[in-house]
Length: 135
Image (tube, rainbow, N blue to C red; front, side, top):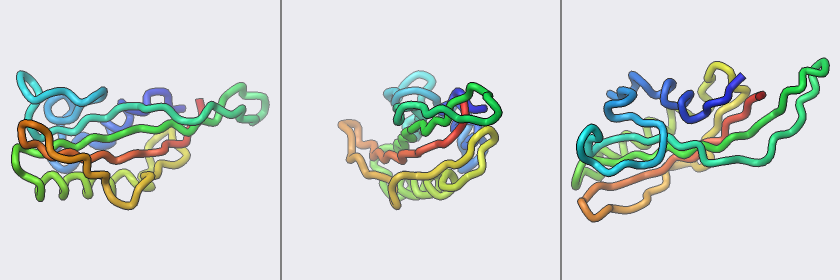
């Protein structure tokens, strides 16, 4: 049963597209580039979801949950094409991915959301997931 949706997505992404947990892939909110955080990076944050529903399976006492998770992709400075390619690759990888402990994983949008360019010239995208699981 899933309980740490953000950490589970980090685990699923580790090793794909050059992502390494703790190096350029992080659970939690977006962090500014600097010591220990590169320009091009991915951040995974649990963002909520509707309330749990009772899951009745032999009186198990578990709940059916639909957790939402946001994956944020930040490009290197002034590198829109590579950042967009990474965001699209992660969107494709995550949509309908069979993650251990989950009933279903779906992206909420057909394309990653372009969030714009920051003050330092980094482009950013978000990919929003809905992850169904029992807890």
